Length: 619
Image 1 (cartoon, rainbow, N blue to C red):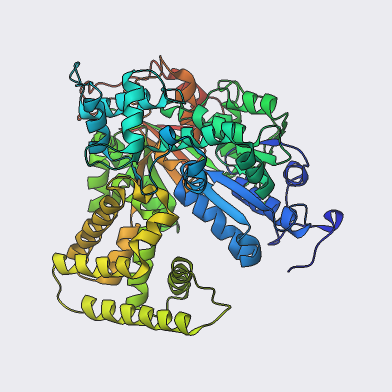
Image 2: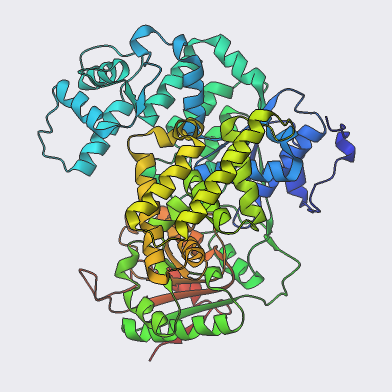
């Protein structure tokens, strides 16, 4: 066990220097709301707070820290940072989960605490569309309005989520709950993730023993991306930890609240401060962006209706560092000509392709075809990340990809460590405690890598490549993977991800006929990413090009100005050093191709303020 450090003698690890407010947040002894803007280093703050709580033994052994994130990759990244920074001794006491995984963990552990009519079978399935549809039909709902499949799914979700527990009466929602909980007509128990959260909240509200056990286990709780928290997720946290000795640290930024359409609770900051008597602490540093870019961010504060703070930039920048441009063109050919000229200049000055990003508000295909074609004529590849971005972050994809890389090149230390650690974790081994079983499993792993390498060296077909991937997955055990990542148990989600990965990898291989290069192309190492603002959240690039600063892209601005302003803020805050916006008067793929900027003129007025940007009229 590591030696305890007195709180007054504790210093940040990794040579990190924390700003004063960050240090206050780390050492706070009460519930805290940390307002962390773009580039503030919120992940690093949570890592440092973890170190502080464990190293000082304020989080007394064997108590744990619970970190709840929105996305699986964010939860995994935080866990990995803790383990790499502090080792396994602390990592095993750090539970990093998504809201869905946390709720499912509680339900699976305390399922029998539910009354019989709310208790699903142990082997319940998650989110099976056919079973849910059958339950509604059996309950008498036959889609009388002729809703499309996507709208019908939304209707089903709303009915299920608004049915109060315990289930009573004879409404469609109540009957559907009864059928899905117990199973029917050869259909097994089937839950949605919202049902799982609702059942977990019910367990908390009716079983004080479970609640006390939860609070005794987790002395501290971290909530990441707090501005996007839904009411159901907040109720889960509130029911689990309000009025307890567990200390909550919520980290978020109301200037980046762009998930209201997905149910984000607008009053979440105010509610948390009131319900948990939380202290609000703003972080003042922007470690990401150059000073001129930060000046633009500051100008957005008034329209975003947030308090202006004295944002500070990293000492690595000079006062006038940063470059902002506004391109105005009559057609997409001119737009592409000017943007490509600027992009090629950046590349010639040493900016890598993966450190450049092209952003759009939505539907990239409607905005970038001409730009991609002109880039291609210069030998520059750019791709829409939609089908790549989500799966590249998935555990199963990272695991398979690293296994493939190691099978071809054993001198890949990072990938080898990942594969070996995954084998140990999924097989239940500890590398510090060697055994015959561990040695045999290690031999089995080597045999798998050898067999994979031999197969890839042959002139294999796509079907045979499918078999290679399936053999890798079978080695690591599908059921154990699904147990570790609950979303993989949802319907065909796991199989869909694997099939999409195989299709994309095979597509890359067919283009280059080189496995190493196909793996790297699949990861996007040699292409400029194109994505929507929503997909860019949490990412950063040296140079960002926002294409489509037009009313057509921000068509909902009149109805939701606050959320669209937040989207604009997210876009401009992705850039480290270079930021460009492009307006084009004619978009040939849009239903109404003629574009204006009347509705969003405030963005143009902002960019045209003296000293903010260089306006370039493309001709």
